Image (tube, rainbow, N blue to C red; front, side):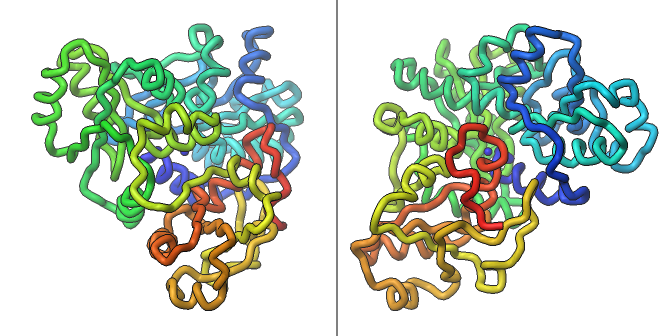
Length: 403
């Protein structure tokens, strides 16, 4: 990041703060780990996700069924947290290199901390987790046949694969699925998609419209079908249902529309793949990599939209505590566009707006563009930016969060 991937990231962020991560475990990227495994197939990888995630057996929430590393040991994080015998299962590797992985590298950081506290001496956290098979598909594809396996009936596909197919003119049928909002995060995600660029030619259905989806897919014989989540879940579930009915060419886009747009921005494919997106407003959505490349530009103002009781206060980060983004000033989004205009009257400047979660404050951003402001929106907010600083080894702005 989907949870929906953005939502999954949030929930894992909250759940994994039970154990405060330490800073003295080693870090390794998934491509680096695969190179090591290619040289030594016996290296120890421990997957700390849930049983359902590890075995691709989730029945509701199938978007978490994204495969596993072949021959990885499996011990759930909660077992490492609650059961001393679970840690003892790894005692044979106390003085050997051991590699911890989860889905996004939140839980694996907590697991790494637990092993350090129990005397393990060569603990390595796998940056980014299993979702890196899809975020970094091009780097990892050479290792897939040897070291990756999945039990899903349909194919999980990456933003890179979909972008390549669109650019090559393969014309996949893109189907976005929304479910009834169940949590406040679903409502926030729905609001996000009111602003974020979307697939231009996609067809959108409610999860309950499964028979209409079936009818639509049956009319498109021989055409690749790519499902992706919008609000709540359901896309992977429908992909599985149709595959079980014997319909070929069914796939699920890991990360959905959101990570697809992030991918084409990061890979500078917006000129080619961007023509397959529809811009819904004048907000310019940028990624942390975009931001890192723009911070040196002149006439740029970064606005932190969090409440002033949170700005410049210690935030409990995944690996490091931080207070705010370097060079930013605070303006609480709830104050509205009129007060913003008074505090920041210069419409010749470029304004980068960001919230904690990448969603709160979008209404303000939209209103400001209508007033003639040039507004950039940091996708994923401070949470996603922090994820980049600790997980992307070549990210050029690792010190951008003030600690």
